[in-house]
Length: 254
Image (cartoon, rainbow, N blue to C red; front, side, top):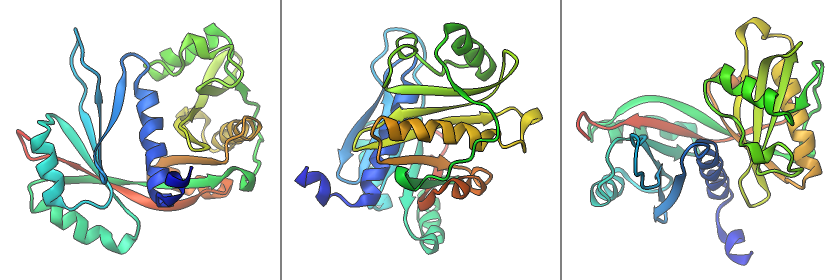
C-alpha cells in the first residue's frame, strides 16, 4: 500500500484505464498490459495460434519521443497506436509537434475523467436494468456487433464486468459496462445510446444505475475516456477531467 501511495494520482488513474481497456478487449482473446519502462506501457494480444493479431497500443506518461521510439524499436512493436498522456492543456501543442517531427500523425485526443463515487450525481429519468439474462446479453452483443459480457458474469453478484442496459420493449437501445480495474477504481466501458433514442436522458440513466451499484460493491472512484461529445455529458454526473490522451499513428511502415 505504501508503494501505491507514492505513485502520482494521475498515474494510478492511467493504470486504471489500461487495465479496464485490457479487460474489455479480452472478451475473445487476452489483450495484455505490459510495463516496458516506468513511463511506458504496451497493450497487445497474447500469443495466438490462429487468427490475426490486433494493433498494439503504446501508452506514454512522462517519457519523451526519443525514449518512446527507442522502446518501440527495441521491443519490435509492430502495428500500433501511440497514446501520450498530458496533464496540462497548454502542453498539447508542443507534444503534438515533437511526435510529428518523428513522423507520427496526430489523429485526435480523448479526455480522462475521474469521479469519486461518493460525489456522484443521481440522474435516472429512464428505466435501466442490469443485464442478467443470456438473451439480453446476446441481443446487446448483436446490436453492438461484439460481445459485451462473458456468460459467467451474468449470475455473479460482484462480477468483474457488469453490464447495464435500457430497453424499448425487448430491444436494447443503450448500454454501458463497469469494469473492475483495481485500486478501488472501476472503468466505464462502451457507453452507447442508439441515435433514435438520444436526448431522452438515457445516457445519464445508464451511468447513474451503474455508479449506484459501483458504490454498493465498494468502488471509490470511476474513470473513463471521453470524446469531445462525451465530455459534455460526464460533468453533469460529477466527473472532472484529469488529463488528456493525445493519439498518434506511426509513420507508414512503422
